[in-house]
Amino acid sequence: MGLDITLFMADWQRLGAVPAADRADALYDALCPLDHNDVYRGNGLAGDWLWPPDRESAWCAEYVFRTTTGAYSPHFRAGNAWNDMRLLVDASVRGAMDSFLTGLILDTDPDDGADPDESPAPAGGSLFPSAAGREFPSTPLVCPPAAVSDKARVWKRVEPCLDGLREPFAAECAGWAGRPDTFEGFTALLREWGDVTAEAGRRAWGLVGLS
Image 1 (cartoon, rainbow, N blue to C red):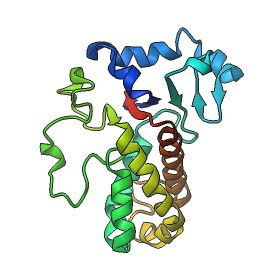
Image 2 (image 1 turned 180 degrees about the horizontal axis):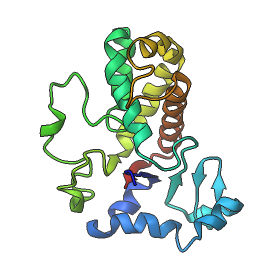
Image 3 (image 1 turned 90 degrees about the vertical axis):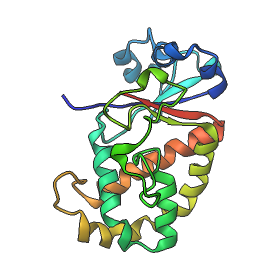
Image 4 (image 1 turned 120 degrees about the horizontal axis):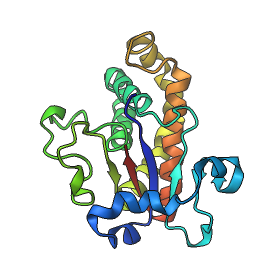
């Protein structure tokens, strides 16, 4: 069994009002006692967002990735692909993509000089202090509302440039183990992250990814 990820967008004020040790459970409990099988049969799936039954008062929702079946590995492979190809990409696009992906599928900005193995703390920070000491640095993923809004704005610049990544992907990633199988799969996953940040940014909510 590989690592999985469950991605939520959440009202940061409501989440912050929950005791820190209970916040992960609160996100899951907001969607349960929903039977997920019942939900996926049509009781709460709105596009790719899974909502509680009383959507009007909902303060969080779960995003259902179309192509990953909940696994974290496709996100990890996409991050590896970007790290491989980024130096072949125009600097303006490279900077925007770095900004968009850092904190989502990249742990640190590739140009900040930090050694990922020496990062001082996992992404959870003070919001999920019980996560300290986890071996996998991308779990949990925590992106506050201000950062989400920034990423949503950056995505508008990045998305029109995606097709220009085809040649760098072919040169550095195609056919390599630990990389996305196809360029189309790579860009499809990036577009999902674009949709996620756009919706969360519209609501001024943050993002939390839990394994």
